[in-house]
Image (cartoon, rainbow, N blue to C red):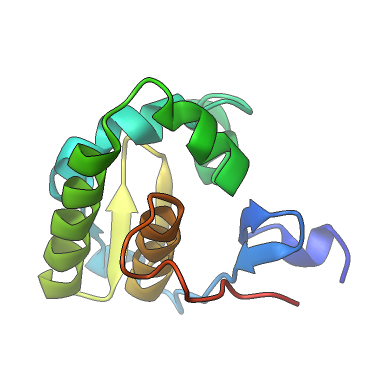
Length: 136
């Protein structure tokens, strides 16, 4: 698979990706999730390393296990694990199946954001630690 084929996927490792799910013109149904991510913002902001979200959207963030581990050196892992669990519950319960984060400059299918939070939780050592990411 070429880099161009992956242009809308979210990279979470060298050969691991969260695959893009087509929004099928559901853009007008998007639910803003910035408030639902709550206490995860200190971590998410530290992952904005490739560029700035206003320019590159989700591609500005480094969601690899290594980047998350480096960001955790300055943060409270237990607090972030609780924040991640809370955010996952809030997103799962949110109305709609298309989410937008204006802060991350990204719109995606609900399942994509939930997979991203599950990946972050695994990196934090949460209950999803044994689950494998999507690989091709």
